[in-house]
Length: 245
Image (cartoon, rainbow, N blue to C red):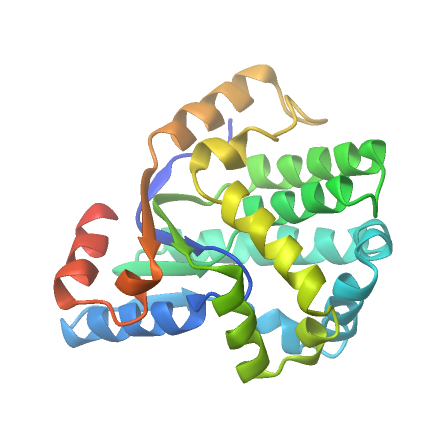
């Protein structure tokens, strides 16, 4: 078992549907931390601006099946090397809190959405899920606190329009609404996320997976509604920080 496979105090994952307001909430939380004289590291979706990755993100909304099956090299590089670097940063203890905008298990959910809408086959989805699980087990980032931001798909679409990211708008309102309804349901809890994990993927053992599941079951969870996270109170932010330690 990888020696770092354990929950990491101060590591917070913020998840939820597309356009829900994760970046805004995370920035508010970061400022709250810094106002206390503490250090926070944000791990967001900056990779979308990469000249190679950005076009692939565009295609992921237009042709999700092709994107998922043709991008394994990208996923290997991003979630292998990038995930390893993040783990090193977290373990360096140079930060009081580390906040992640989504994480590896979010990608597993996106993979399952492709299977359900027919853009990839069951076999393709199973192969990708096994691969992603393998990367996750070997380079685990297990948060102490998992937060889902919950909002209506209508409000999410309004935010998508306001921020005007072409790769989201090109998907269209109907497709984004369907995807977001799925994300709201399937990222609602750690139990939902772990339910689609492949058992003992290649290069791992059943014991490794049992250890992973036990650590995952101990993660603290919060579901915040739009009324709570859109303009969060200082008390709520303090509760988030307390739950992550």
